[in-house]
Length: 78
Image 1 (spheres, helix red, strand yellow):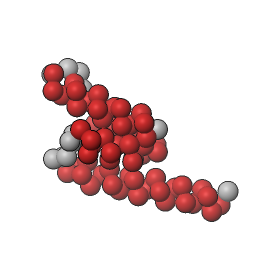
Image 2 (cartoon, helix red, strand yellow):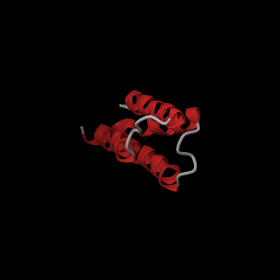
Image 3 (cartoon, one colour):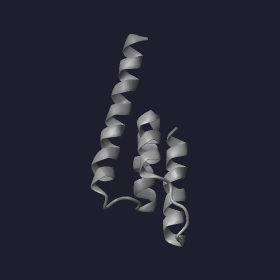
């Protein structure tokens, strides 16, 4: 999921530059929430994309933390 989110961030950045059809922000957040938080955060850094949007600057690290907590809980209780 991280790879998909990372690629989607790059695709959205490319579309933003050339004025094409954008990836909805909701989709980026859903992908990040479903396990792609690190990919979303790395995509923000790699392409300098969505770095001025407060919802992404705060939201992506929170989703990374949520993803980590979920992995830890699954590891403990499985």
